[in-house]
Image 1 (cartoon, rainbow, N blue to C red):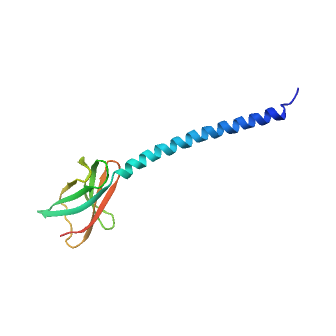
Image 2 (cartoon, rainbow, N blue to C red):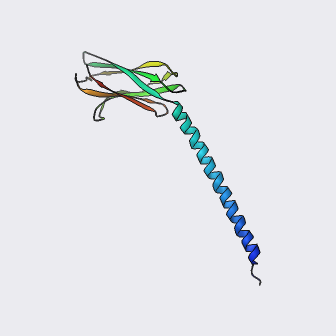
Image 3 (cartoon, helix red, strand yellow):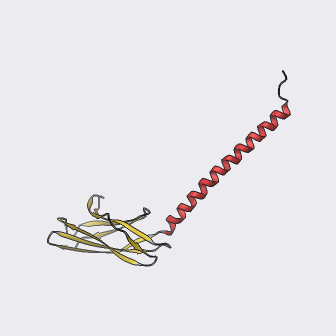
Amino acid sequence: MKAVSPIVATVLLIVIAISTGILLWIWVSGYISRNHTQSTIVLEERIRVEAIQVNSTDGSLNVTIYVRNIGGIAAVISSAYVLDVNGNYITANISISEEVEPGEVKGVAIISSNTSLTPGRMYIAKVVTSRGIEASYLFIAP
């Protein structure tokens, strides 16, 4: 039995190295392009909380969070929260589907019974879009 000649062995090693490099390149370029597309969408969706309106009557709390879309695509507000400054939950509205077009300002309401805010204390109003973009606003309860 004869061994494989050094030239054939070298050619086989070169072919294996090149094919491995090509497969690695295809995998990496697909991963990069997929993540780039997702990050572009996230960068285009931007929101900001402009103002808060708080009304408290007879043990019920009405909070309206005014959200401005400062991004390039429509944002769908899916939830809104009121938290204390330590991040503890006070109240929320998690069944929202409010679409805010670019440049538009819309009010998102949180209505809660048997909940109140302590006047003069600081709270955080937070809104979240369906894509997971968040905006928060620190306010003092009237």
